[in-house]
Length: 55
Length: 210
Image (cartoon, each protein chain N blue to C red):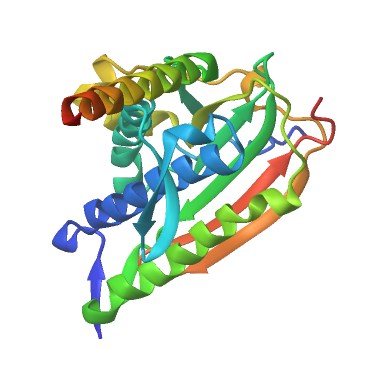
């Protein structure tokens, strides 16, 4: 006779196992690299400003 | 020694708080160690009394926080079987998967004074393993990115939908390309067994990365 095989992905209540992921992507490496360069520029400008005020 | 259930003292919430705090640090550290982002965005901090590297990039930090904010209700209800940090190549194919396999006991026998310090010690060991895992992994190709997957059950997603942040941070069911990795190499990193949670961390690495 026909016997129904248990599906390991399904609980008795039919609650299926699923894998979820966010729709949104994290910031790209390129984007982060640009941000880092801009931050370094800003910090060096601030440093220059401080040094010129001290002179 | 007292035996309490998951419902007592809002136990699920305590476990979710501890695990999400740990996962946040672990994700930052994985991204640093596996060079997904430039090392210049990371700063040295201390967590569980060990040095870790945490990003100072606002958008990336917000992304990780939003992700874990959505995962938290699942952990709280013991509905998150695995949380997986997937590193993908330029073609969005997985090259590495850091798998956090989580299971929580239905009943607890705890001595509360030693509980948290014991869990902290165990989590510290995970961070130390992550920080040296590059020694056993093959270098990733340039231009990698990452995503976070959660293994759960269909009905459990209702818990996620209750969270306000989901409206701005929706989730979808992963397709085969995002999940499947051909003949991965398995590298066990750490296992912990405590009164409140059992967790194991292993890495699945694609044999041919480039």
